[in-house]
Amino acid sequence: MLQINYIRENIADVKKRLVKKHFKNADQSVDLIIQLDEQKRSIQKQVENILAEENDAAKRIGELMRAKNIAEAESIKVLIPALKDSRKKLEEELQKLEEELYNILITLPNLPHESVPEGRTPEENVNVYHHGEIPTLYDGAIPHWDIAAKYDIIDFELGNKIAGAGFPVYKGKGARLQRALINFFLDEAIKSGYKEIMPPIVVNEASGFGTGQLPDKEGQMYHIGIDDLYLIPTAEVPITNLYRDVIVKEEELPIKNAGYTSCFRREAGSYGAHVRGLNRLHQFEKVEIVQIAHPDKSYQILDEMIAHVKGLLEKLELPYRVLRLCGGDMSFASALTYDFETYCAAQQKWLEVSSTSNFESFQANRLKCRFKNKEGKNQLVHTLNGSAIALPRIVATLLENNQTPEGIKMPKVLHPYLGFEMID
Image 1 (tube, rainbow, N blue to C red):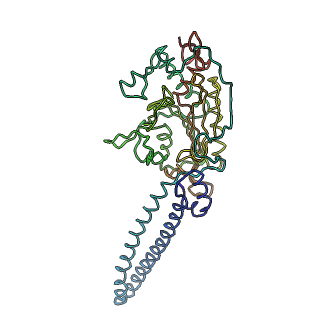
Image 2 (image 1 turned 90 degrees about the horizontal axis):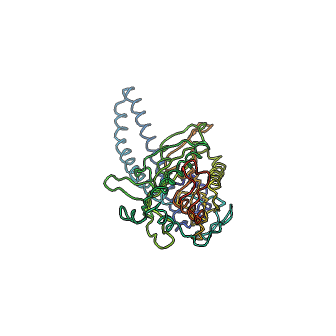
Image 3 (image 1 turned 90 degrees about the vertical axis):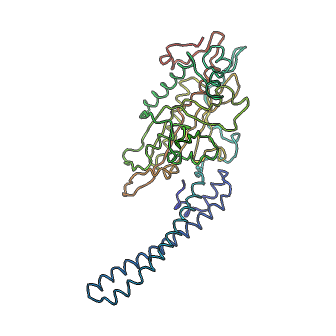
């Protein structure tokens, strides 16, 4: 959530950056926020003045009573109920204004960083880095969903029978590949200084709100109605919420956590060939890295997180590219996001496998996550996270790019985790 003080002091800049993120009615929303804020502060001042009058009256009454000047004390007493009644009406009006202001503030997305490119669609994202060569496959190479059936390692039909489309069953070496990737990603995170966390995979409404998933405008979260809980779309949600309503110590920053969870997304409206197989699922496995950072160092930390994800993909021997997302393709809460895509050779397409973002103080303001700065004042932290990494499209790319007539060669870094070198 944006800070009202920042909006008040940077009206034109806030409007401009909201437009860059393609937020509708940016001018009207900001103008209304400023108007409500001015009304709120005016009424707050009136309430404070009346409270001061009440306190002065109470003090004067006490002085008069001690001086045995009962009549004058009583004449002042009769004025107090009117003051209290006026204050009560103003406080009721103030509460309504605060609610109205809050309800508008929570609809505003985070402001994009100055480096975010203009644009509305994924096609307008900017390619900032490329690594590796596009593999050339042998004649007869097939897409991963056919590989899965050929070697009996992923069963999409069986998953459909049990739960519905988008919930595959991993079998044999397919299941072992999942486990190997999870352990590899976690081990690499721990080597990089992250503490492993195993959080719940359901969260309450306050947690979903804290990281910006709620209100769920796009209907992507699975809601457990009877308990009013939500299946997590990413481990970012529970791990970041470890610090909701917490004042961390400045010397503890940055706080680095990593966790593996299953993730659940409804993917409402997704259909067609582009979501076939592992390309888009309702349930998938992912290792997430999360940092709670000092505001002065968050963009340096974002670069370090990007370097971490690059290292994972290079160790897996996969060609990849890094995209800086344009304003219209960014998430509600992000200030700057980089997507990683691997090239899936049989499908001849790039698939997103990681998204790494800096949310600046947007989530922290919702979470009320702060630290005490050198001046002794509470200051909002910055929050960051990244997929390190989501498994489905990594698996799809590994299967397609490494296929040979004899089987699927696994990258060397996974051999100790797998206990085998080839799926055949």
